Length: 188
Image (cartoon, rainbow, N blue to C red; front, top):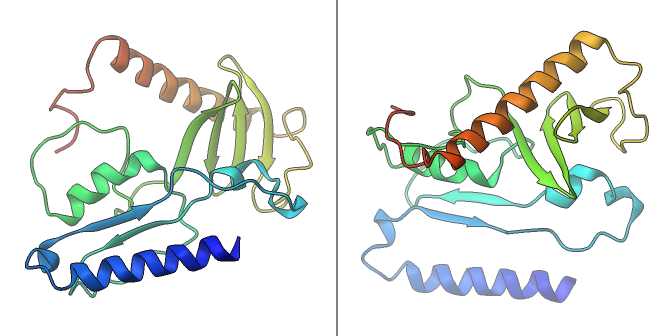
């Protein structure tokens, strides 16, 4: 693993040393991310969300904006609207992602893995089978996801998350089925 990290460090350093010499460098927004994590062999990293934790870096040369908190929940689908925000794009566009630099909304992500929707926010990790919540874990009190709260948590919290996940997945499916993902009427 250490050799992989060394090579990545070398490759990025070499790339940026060469890129700095190009006339386009100062006018470029660099986005660096991974598409997945490696295999986790240590039990500490067997937590559901850990298989999705990857780095993401937005870099603009000569930009001294404050750094974003590294614990913020971000999804790869958030890259597109975040890039547009960093480029000061002010036209309408369609995206299911959100601008990660906008602090007015709640940070969360939702994905589909092994036949279950996984919704993650700063409070809970929720697994949903498309009909109902099958597992829910407290992010702050149970960092290793060992205590499923689906039968003990306040029913109003369960309903809130169930409704939210159904809304998200149904809206996404509807937009996909009806070819609405090219609409320009969503974000402005």
